Length: 451
Image (cartoon, rainbow, N blue to C red; front, side, top):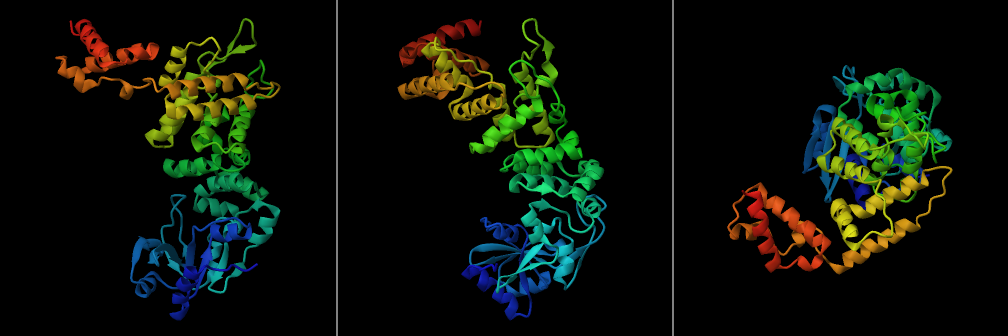
């Protein structure tokens, strides 16, 4: 199989050959080409040194000049090009203390992580070069470290998480010796920044076979270090309608979310939605166990995991909000006001993800055939309320903080409390959402709050 470069890629590579240098496409783009998958995230390697690359092209960026990497802006595209190199010692289990430029593609490919990522395409002719049996491992669906796996992981401990992530994304197994080295060196993952670990973990959860990746984390001990809260669910008995242990329940929920193509925040919530059960299990009088408050506890534990991984506030809040609300219980006797209060509490933007999480949770309960009819009926009720365009948030009120201050009520926290009370009343009775009533009621409320 020969790689056929697009015209711009061909033109880009011909600049190197015209100047007496070689250029190779390397990494994931080559692997995915052989797997017949789309990947236009191109990385290149060359025998030209950074100074040579900068002389050949008018527009370049020194993105990693210390390690031989230059980004070339060519025909409005950005191409990252790295000079053939070998790496010095890795004292921090992540970055080489030094790099040495070499003229051999073979030496350059030997320093890479896994055989399936160490193939190259010679440009512009498109010939695939495989010096480490990468194609053989692709056929076997194996992730194998190049050379001595112990050395590869001592060089860069993040490669262990990358192995788990590739296992999830590709649905591949990790080769035996590679897995044994990961077990032996799992503790060195502590040398890696939380941000890098988070990136790999989230991509793993978002993969097509997250069970494979998470199981690799568990059996190697990486999960004990990175997400010990999840490790503790393994073998944890739930009882009741659950035939499976808690760990299996969480993986089944995640798999349902993956199969249905739910967004990453729902997948993360599915994986973590019940982790608080390990902290809230008690012997029940009528049931084997109870887990009162496990939704709140799970949200708290998930928030701690996200803080440890240094996620963004938005990522943490979105996922924890879903977990905190996943135990909602709708019955047909709910009033319209109750439906509107639910919408206000959850937020319009979170309703669909929350329902997706509930579906994943229901489908993950083995031995219990889920009946989604009540969920669908609730969705219909919510849609009916949304179509009425009644006030469901502060921005929908016919009065705001500025107007309240114009009524003579001084600026301060009392205004927020007044607005919240007005919204509660309007949600219960939408006819009250008129300026006349709201102004009079705001004055009345202020007299009690400001005394």
